[in-house]
Image (tube, rainbow, N blue to C red):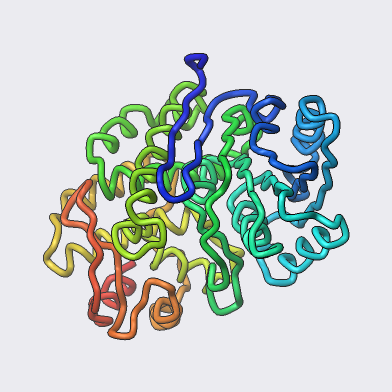
Length: 364
């Protein structure tokens, strides 16, 4: 394997490999290796498809001239992650008469990965899905682990399924076309891995912050590989989020509430998670679990990566709390949060007092 390429194995009942490196979307042999039947469907969005869909289709058909490659292109953005667009993908699969040995390729960011993965989980009770993430956030988080879903007006990811991919192929060259804001959003999820389990990784990210923002390919590849290794290890131990895997949601209870309240038209997911991680650290402080110094360190790193660390103006704490009550991480007994006892030491905490949450939100 060339030194510029990295592979991360994900163990479990349905093991698969994450391939990381440049020019992988043009590697027809690698793409075709994961196609069992004679048909594939490429699902993408209106931003990504013009950049990469022709290349992926050409690479697949060069390696497998017999392969029938269908396409379906969706609108871009979180607002497309709906049951209506899910139905459109299912309709396209029906019109293409895809059989159970077909493969769906999810080409795009987290929205496409989640929506297309959910369609693959449902079509004929489950067909193969190969994730082709084109954003940093999708490479290090949503493409790995098999969680697929769509949003409802009441909240994010409320309808979905666990459906592990057949493979994840992360072409780091795609990051060169990523808007700076989307790159920074992905870095929030990279920071999360250090925050929950690897304090030295936070030191490395702090030292490499200028190179990460400058899109240094070698540094980004290392960041992706280290993040994926962390997620792969956790997913292998807890594939259905019955325990440890919940730690991957650090900052997400706050973050999803922010996204929902803003109608998915304010902070993007990574930005909301950045704010959410700082709020979770402050909640940990308020509950006497963690030192203020570690919160300051996390906030400083996120700020250095040009990410927001405070609640957007005008959000009502009571409305945010109402969204949290519907969050998937809430339980019958009360709110459940991922908190920490300091950098690299996250834990699940049930029955968190709403008064403590409101206190943190009001000083947002």
